[in-house]
Image (cartoon, one colour):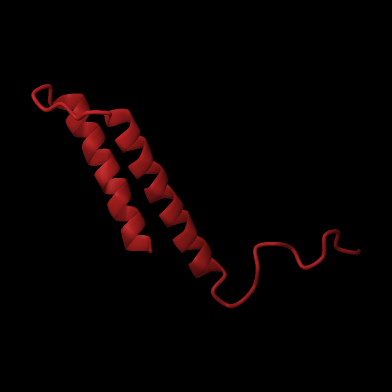
Length: 69
């Protein structure tokens, strides 16, 4: 999952660089493709980090909504 997210993020940045700095290559609907690959990459990276962080069975949510003092 982590490698997949990094790969999508790399593809997004590569397409952005090609679109920005190479005027001979035209990417149709570049904004949509770059945005979609960026969102997919960031989502997969965040999901992988959460999986690694909470791999012991704990949850992201607090066990008690308002801890007692």
